[in-house]
Image (cartoon, rainbow, N blue to C red; front, side, top):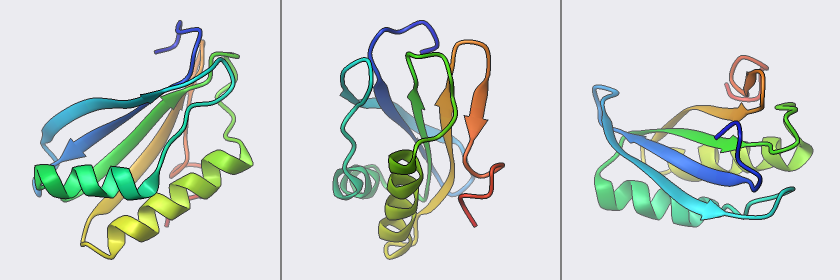
Length: 109
């Protein structure tokens, strides 16, 4: 994902042992944004029987620093998922040379 010229939003859907059920690209966007919808993420998690998620998207600019929208989306997905007993373990943003973890940065409890 580091070398892509458009943003791509994918979700790793995990089971109750944190084993990968599915790695899916849910949306592709433009060089500066990719749409992502908390409702659709949770809906897909329920379809797959996932109990945990890892959100992943790239920043084609190369800088993985999360935007306000990235932080807001992460919190919205975590809140929507929690209602259904699904945990968001992390939201990773992939840059060219490094990545950022929203959990490590303190944006996920």
